[in-house]
Image (cartoon, rainbow, N blue to C red; front, side, top):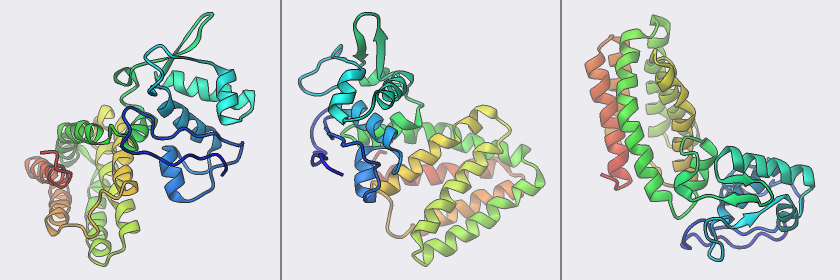
Length: 266
């Protein structure tokens, strides 16, 4: 990949990457894909991520103008890709389109906070700690309630699955098989949200999955899961299986509290 400038994680705003793409797919290392803030192998999304984070740069205040042509020039992509980039940024509320002006960048606070793309960009930026704080507060608000509802409303065949996942989490975590552990952890939390009987909670499962995977990408996950975290997952699973809403809520609260403590957010 030519033209990739070194990432400067400590620069303010989103001036982390100013990349001059040469029309190649992002098939490099995981580090490069993470720096771009999008899914590895998806060239258009690589450009979207880089473009989003370059918009509020030092020399551009709110209202800095950019159009398809500038995306073509800066990232050396086709007009079709440039238009897709512009559309993705508009959908995420990173820019607005004004007649006779073109694309107008928006303040970060106006970006679509529930977009998994936006969350990913923020997690790979100098806004990381604030994003982790707000996401952890979201988890504290919804995951204990989702566990409560799953204990009440989930079908019996679903209630048995957290038990199996918790057992696998313990086995893989204690044996240092962290890649498997992280996938199982995402599945555990997503399963509970999707089977809470609340479609609003279910719709947030992809956001929680993005948070969990983001922590792994950023190396902000313990090299070995804490015993108390594994115990809390066991307790959530047992409470759901036993149809004990209060115990499920308390145990899930312990999980997210432990996350806040680990990230030094509490």
